[in-house]
Length: 246
Length: 221
Image 1 (cartoon, chains in turn brown, orange):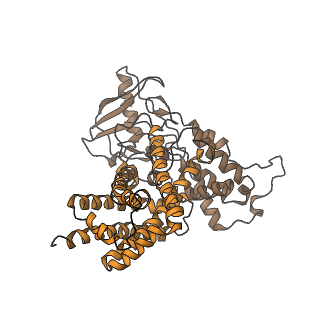
Image 2 (cartoon, one colour):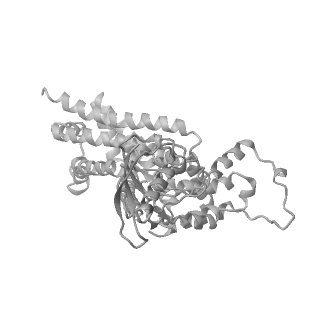
Image 3 (tube, rainbow over the protein chains, first blue to last red):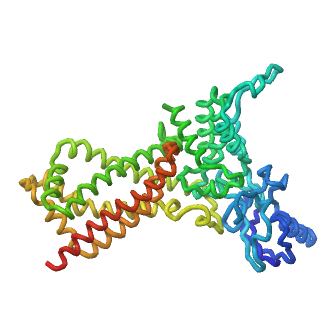
């Protein structure tokens, strides 16, 4: 298929940036979106032009590195996938595709389509952990009984890959889905109870400090999340925060 | 914003609590007004009670005004802050793909409701305050029904009321269940969503029926 691409180009963090139009031809419908981007970059290199910078790593939907706002949606029009899992068969011959970086003040653009998502790391460092003595006397995790229901919910929350699609899709650039998943994965387990109050307060404080917007429960994050993280986690975090504050 | 309301979750909770307070108020307001469809005397009696009872006038009324002002001010402050969290906007943003119009445009429906409340205050509340506390006119327990009917003779006002209540319905369709989510109450999420949809349709529809009933009932007179 032949496509017209309108892609955000920005030389660096201080550059103003603009949308630039490119044409790609003979794109196979079996390609992934990132492979289509590779084809475009190869053609740019062949013409001695600067290739387009975009994030990618595992290319199998696990690492959360690939981002991209495609036609107004993070990871494109398909559901439950990352951009590397998006197939070109989702588009039609002759389509015009808009490709932009994830937008949020807390995710500043580094170059072209690459954004700095270190804000998520700092939130995680503020409390997204449990303090366990790993000096050789670590207790076997199976010796602590955990209900299957809670273990499943915790595992669901822990499947968040921190890609930032929740922030990118939210009209308020809110990071509540990400933070709530990271709070919930521990809040549901006995090992996480000890630091529960400090965890939720510190992670929310860091989230606010990073400049993310306020959640207004539109639910866009849940729809766009490649791992299907539920907004039930946001309700749980609200409860955890209220319990820790009162 | 400092103190307790400096936290994003605390602001959510404050918005949700003021919303639930206003949701309860709307139910009481409709309950009183709906009696005007069936009995002039019952409506006058209830209105007289609400208009003269000390607790309603000097405790509940100030709390209500505070609740309304707080909900609007906080709503607009949050909207501005949220818009400011994405300085560079998307060239193409497909919001309709993942969220309802109601949830994305609470500030629009809220703005229309605010405009309606201004009209409503000019229509009823300010004349009422003037009657009781400025001009100290003699109290007539039977005046309320006639005042209500008089307001619904102008088709433009009736039309404005209908439009405002349609926007209120859209506001409530998202706001009702959103308030519970903000408070962390999601154990009965499906029930809350269903109840919210029923409430969001029934309450505004009730107010619309009242306005239309009094308008059309006076057309032939």
